[in-house]
Image (cartoon, rainbow, N blue to C red; front, side, top):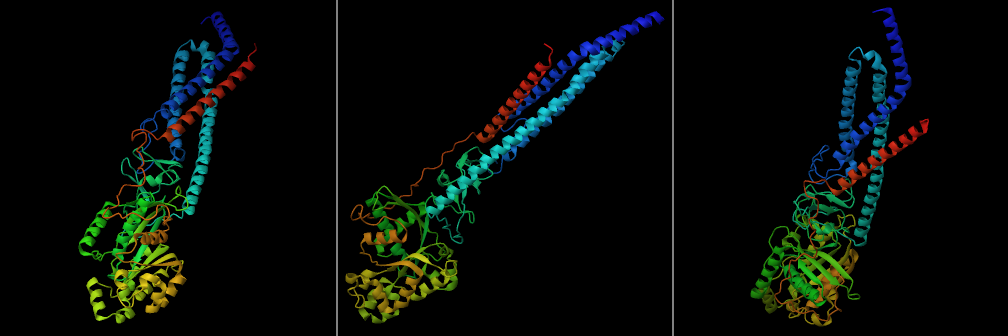
Length: 576
């Protein structure tokens, strides 16, 4: 090249460099920086919207279907969403930046003109590379935003969990709510039943305020389930966590009252239980309350017993197996205030009398571990002193009617020995002593006049049960006595069962109770089933959607704030 031409070219190159670095670079670099930064932010916002806006389980950040119920959004899914966005945006921005740098280099430096376009290339590349700094800062700010949202949300969640748990604990304590299993070979005390989802039948073993939600748990099918009894958990089907047996409706809302019928074989326990159910049913009708069997089979069994009793004058002998409690759901207005209603689920345990004839047999009756009341059924003709006092004609009358061979004092002693193994030493609040076959007893010489004076306690002391009477006074807070026969006033039986069962439904609201005859109480549930409501099994829970939208709104707000601050700072630096 001619020296003059080389000189001209050199001077031209120097001039271009001077113009490029002193005039073009200061303008093109910030423009490129702003454009690259806006592009990175736009990519982030686009993928954040694609990830957080959808309501379906599948998407850029899929929500796995749980085995039972969804965990709280802020306990895991929020960070999976953050990682799904970050893991998508960062590589995409990096790839785009590398592609732009390569393209700019090829276009601007790929020929002889590269000597003159170098300032433009430098401005563009520097702007693109420098945009990584504000993009990283914004990414860090958005990560902090995720942490703040999670921390604030979890703090509110924890407050709600603790408050709801405290409310339920107070409710259970003030209502003295006892939950036990009525099924044979179990009879366990229950802290929290297993609840069944009405939508898909899934069993929820920990339906309480916790990691799956404070107010509601969302089942895998999408149904929203209440977490506490005051919120409606009692409206779900419940099962024993130990044996998986079905529990009564309203368990947890209404106190379970186990009422063991204690007595030897043929003492009259089943007959008295049948008379007691009839009397309670009549009382419920008289005071405009409600009584229902929990299970249909109990209603059928009761109807069968009524028929057999009407035909043969006595109830069928109880089977030898461990008893399933006959469960009654009872609501009775209180005498002093008809607007106030007392509720109980009565577990009537009527085992065969043979279960009380030995210590091992009594030990198998684990429901004795939980109750605070019992009914001690005394067959007067099982007492040795009464038997010896009967005449031949009276003995024949008793044998025709049937009587127990087990001394009631021995039966009670075995039961008390078992009760003493409890932490409270078997202390009972209420004990009802029922002397059965009173209609037959008053026809004998030793029982003559008993129906008139009604001093059953004194009569039991006179016929050899004085020690038993005194022991019961020590074991129980209160003891009441009742003579029961086929002609006993049903109101007296109802009064006794209301008292021993903790119900405030004694006489006084409607006078004498009507005779229910052969009418059988129904089995209609005394609570409305929980409705199946939710978003379906193909959509995320509402809590997830609210959490995602909150984060998305926060991302948009932080981005807008950052852009505003950047714009103000740039405007302040401009010379005009």
